[in-house]
Each structure stands twice: as structure tokens, then as C-alpha cells.
Length: 114
Image (cartoon, rainbow, N blue to C red; front, side, top):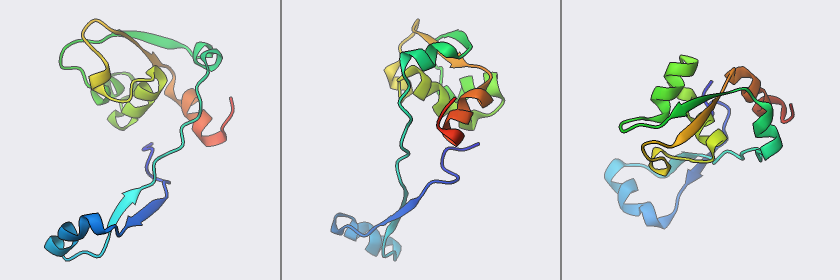
């Protein structure tokens, strides 16, 4: 389940991109609207079963998602759950948590409540 499948799209026609448009014979850029993340309270976070994972050199969220969920596109779940949006926010030795089963957490996005 990709977080972008049902996302709204916007079309950017900003003058800032004029050279881009001309070089590619385009009139606008299509963007996905940024998702609105549910606020994740500490109480909610603590209510999930979590696997502990020790960050090591070369780790990527998509690799961890593939290992735990068999779906690398769910990388964003781990990033959101740990409040670290990119791999650059982690360093070797950091302890991160992987919510399992992922379906339980994804239901928050579908229904908005748990």
C-alpha cells in the first residue's frame, strides 16, 4: 500500500520553472500533495507492538520495511513512527522501532482512529 495512491495531485505552473517547461515542452509540473500525517501521541505509540531494530551503517528504511513487512514501499511507516523522516536522521547504533503488524497501524490512516 503506497501512501501516494489516493493522494491529490496539484499542477505547478510557477514562473520559477519556466526553463524546465521550455526544455521539456511542458506547461506545468505535476506534484503529489503532501499527506497530512496523523498526530502520533506517545500513548498511541505505546499501544502498538514494536520490534526493536538497531540502526547500522548502510541501512535504509525501505530495506527494513522489506525485511519486516515484505513490502519496501512501506518505508514511510517506520520513518513516521520513529519521527525521523529520512535515513539521515539516524546514526549507527540508534534504536528504532518497527510497528508490527503493520496492518494495525495502517488502519489509522484508513479510519483515523484506533
